[in-house]
Amino acid sequence: MAEGLVVENLTVGYHWENGFSKIINDLSLSIEKGIIFGIAGESGSGKSTFAQSIYNSLSYPGEIISGKVYFEGKDLLKTPKNELRRIRAVDITFIPQAAMNALNPVKRIGDQFNDVLEAHGKSSAEYEQNVMEVLKMVRLPPDILHNYPHELSGGMRQRTVIAMALVLSPKLVILDEPTTGLDVLVEHDILIDLKKIQRKRGFTMIMITHDLSILYEISDQIGMMYAGELTEYGEREEMINSSAHPYNYLLLKSIPRIGVKRYSGIRLAGNPTNYDENSKGCQFISRCPYRTYECELAHPDMNIVSGGNHHYRCLRYPQWKTDEK
Image 1 (spheres, rainbow, N blue to C red):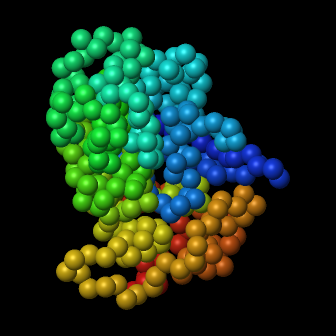
Image 2: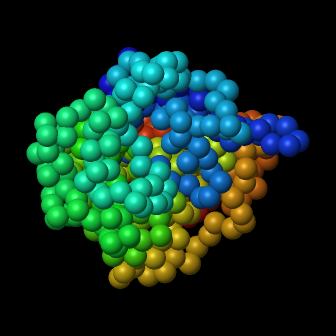
Image 3: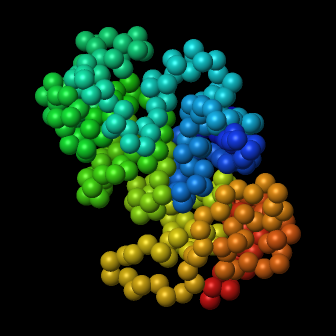
């Protein structure tokens, strides 16, 4: 079993009044130890569901139908609840959307740090140096421990939650759009700080967002999700300069860049599509400008670009690139 995180054939869905709908279908992925792996995709692509599933925190009406999630050789989906509670925050930590709202409004920040430590049988006196270190890493002063959450700005509250998540030195940190709702400059500073902390401590980090510009700045490897599937993933430079899937290529072209002439070619049109389990063809077919009849007949498997760690799910690669030219 490889080091890091290994996901095998993960299938997840949601119960609703008229039945059950799959959101993630047979997803497999291997994330190397000690890197920043970014996952992007439009709203509804399954990013947050994926994050909760690998942390094994998905609750009803969500349900994990099948699959395995290995972390350091242990299947998290088969780990007993009492053992899961032990390893969460200690080995694995999860920072959800709007995490700053998770702070207790009637407790001082220092008391909330102590709550985290005590929940895992750690002494606050023993970990005092750790608390000071993580506060320094996220650029917060020590006297913040005496404050209540409402006395802090949104950016400071977000940094506080990140510091709490790191105080027990986890090996894997999962962040699900952790800077949603923050000012763009504050967001940028927090993400750059996160990258510096990850480099210093060497933990594996999974960053989930809909903002490609964020991922291309801080990630080592990037994966693109569409309709509950990974359409493409690989090293950052290859994903930027040698897109193998039209979805990644067209999204990249939509990002405004200073000093770069606005792209005037084919654009990504239409709305995000939910996974259709009855479809025989490609899930991206309704929006793909390079589709042909063959894309309707078979569902593309994940393939590897020759000579690299670059994976893609497209029947027409590399032919579609000829169409672009």
